Image (cartoon, rainbow, N blue to C red; front, side):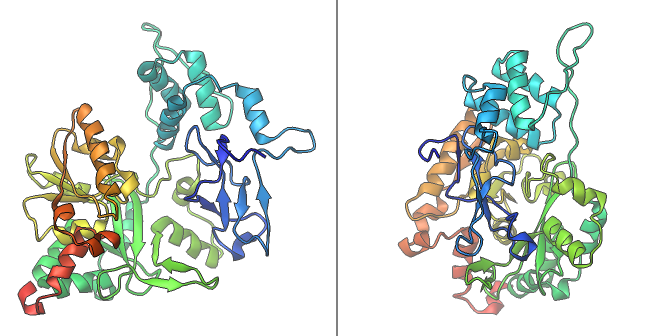
Amino acid sequence: MPVNNARYHLPKKAIKADCPDCGHRYKKKLSRYVDRRTGEPLPEMYGLCDRASNCGYHLSPYHKDPSGMSYADEVKQRLGNDSLPREWFIVAGKLERKGLVQANVIEALCRQEGATVEQAERVVAYIFGKDVTPTRQHENTGSLIVTEGPVYSIPDEVFRKSLGHYDYNQFSLLLHRYFGETVADELLSRFQIGTSVLWPGACVFWYIDELGRKRGGQIKLFDETFHTVKYIDQNGEKRIKTSWVHTAYARRCDEQQKPYPDWLVNYLDERNDVQKSPCLFGLPQLLEEPADKPIAVVEAPKTAILCTPQFRGFIWLAVGALSYLNTERLAPLRGRNVILFPDLSKDGSAYARWSRIAENLRTQGYNVTVSDYLELRATDEQKVAGYDLADYLLDQWNEYPPEWKH
């Protein structure tokens, strides 16, 4: 089986799924194969189980079935895509995840990438994993007709039920302890923070896009120091108490042996837009704040929330993770002044990465700079620990008695 530079590989940062042989008893033990060309995972049957000695499941996309053909052979034979640019597949994959239908993606490849209709159809056939729906052309102009695909989100009813219950919300209690009642209540309202019953004291950070759609809800349980609770699972592996609303909802349905509601079926369908957080955290603030007020973007929602009362001159948003900073997520900020505050890293790689992204964004018309506030002030120990701006502030606050904080 190919191992070096193979098109299909098992990445170091594994994409997890349930192992077909382990069943539901052991969750997320299968490391899925990924297509280097598109960055997309293959169907869930192709992967390697972590439980090598107890299970040993491994289905490679290069494994030949009784017919003598492998998944890789079938793709190559069916599509013959080796001569097409890798970037086209990446673009098409992103558009498919956004919910665009085949005709939309074909139109985008032809218009933006210069592909012919036949080439675009070959790319789309691979990304969608099925025959291409015939494209329609405008009667007068001859151009492909573009229609907006559906975007799947979490119902407002689920969102509203999570709001409040702050006496049982550890994050809420911490905000009150550090900032006092007035500021804490304002932060809870501003960022529309929810409460979850997944773990006693857990909160929900809702990712709400510029149209008010609830695109994802991150569940977290914090300890007394504003850090995510860690624990050791039954297999002796270190875990953190972080999950997602759709995952918790599905788990509860399974436990109660109830069918999934339609919204959850669509949300979990890999063919739909099921990214956990495909938009910035805190976007609803843009509707209330002046258009000329500068925007600060950090990685974690917690950081955006804690920085808001300390640096009132900015609108604080969070992207969700270091690798999530991209043009798609920052699109609602076009035309505004944006400052990025990356987390610290041992070798400065996080700062360098966001600096490169900012440079690319500027070529696309964004007004983006990267702050070196932390890089200049942090100690070597703080850099090794991967501090973010909230961690840095908390270290300073903890040097003072509670009366000083509010």
